[in-house]
Image 1: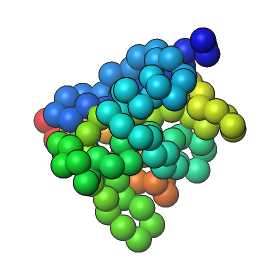
Image 2: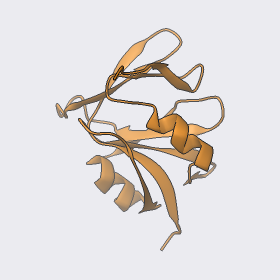
Image 3: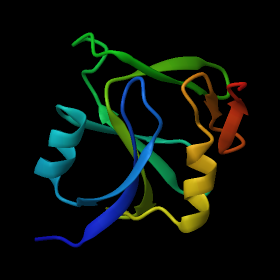
Length: 121
């Protein structure tokens, strides 16, 4: 069995949690509820792993993601890890502070690798 990795898990409607998960395809697919899709969300190796069919399957709204020329809605449960090709790797302790700031009303900016808009209060 592969070594576990530490990730930030974003479930719809709640603050992110930081957990260790098994780094194998079946466990990753079970966490997001289907086939996985990986998106780069920073210049320093953070990856967002989501359900590639989430929108088609009408999964609940979760967070917003801003790219260079677009704004996208993320749906369903997803997690953030690091890229260590050819596999996924644990997030760093400094990543936890950065990712914890991605509140329910926040927008993650892929260009800056951080929260663009923070929820007030």
